[in-house]
Image 1 (tube, rainbow, N blue to C red):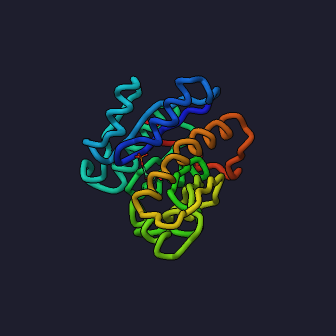
Image 2 (cartoon, rainbow, N blue to C red):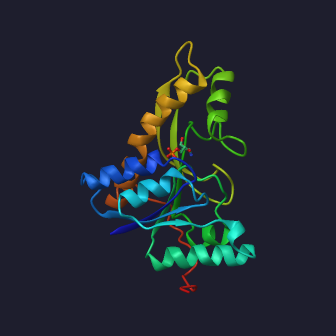
Image 3 (tube, rainbow, N blue to C red):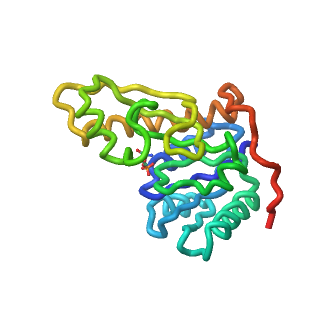
Length: 210
Ligand code: GRF
């Protein structure tokens, strides 16, 4: 059983899409054990609680040091037996010790066709504004492996949408979000089923079980 933690900062619609697919039985072999948000008011925590999934507010300002913050996150993740972290609208950088411990076991969804339109500052409506300003005729969603840099790790799967004449950032965002809600459950289904392989190198052996 692939045990997943979802990290998010906002409304949680991608998490909801994954959870719904699991509840419908279309992702056998995977379960969501934990949802973590840096934002205590995030909708994603409400979605988790409504689904009976442990939902935790955990953010850097709650801790005296970077080290104690990362150690707490690792304690939570290991305590719930997490194998894979899925970022879904998570607006913070994952602390380096967590990236190292979960090397090639963290994935993210980005609302554009990476490697284009990613990196620092490319989040939310900024992405769609940049796509339209560049005159691109297609956009889409990408799920990729997370490393220490924003939106840089290898792309696992993408889904495209056309950028139509007269498209606005808002219409493009809505169109891309619809395919995100198909793409992310599909990626989780393929990882759990073994047909989509994550890079082989794993994180450091777990030493901090709290
Ligand atoms: C999505 O567009 C995702 O691609 C981006 O942040 C947004 C999160 O939306 N990383 P939601 O919280 O899943 O509704």
